[in-house]
Length: 256
Image (cartoon, rainbow, N blue to C red; front, side, top):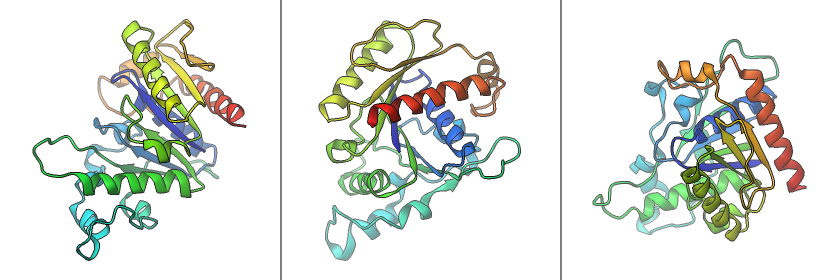
């Protein structure tokens, strides 16, 4: 199953993606964790030291030249089937790894943010090709941490994503962003959506979402964030797992 996570900045989107990937791996699933957010925080959220983060694919000029500028021509449909294994890094387990646990691997996509840095067509083509390959061609679970919108996916790729999770805080601005993301995704054909309200104790009705789950304030996370970026292995792990399990169950049931 392929699940994309979106939401306004600072609402806990990357944390929710990290918790979902961690839960799946501990359940024996092999998981590709794709950081497609400009903040590039998914690796640290998953417990990886910042010094071990892989170079964002967008900056891999060697691969862009090799795959996109092949034989001097611009190849917008490159063969990238071998790239995930080459550019990914394994994510750590918190505590001892359980027997039968799956493998968690991180790919950092990056984003073009330098407006004056020249044409980014080739680099973007490589990003889109790798993302499409993982979503469409791979049988493993794929977790994609997006920016607020769904533009990273594009129309061709989004039709193969099995579900969209929009993370929001219980505030008007955040919920307005959630509703807009939902509308954009629906326009692209992705109707299997769920809303996760982070740091919330109630369940407001939000247009566009039939599935809405709550995650209250986690004191263990509040304390942890003062000293490190990892969000896995919290004292509230069981509570988090229960929400993630309900989320996956809801997306799978709606998909079928």
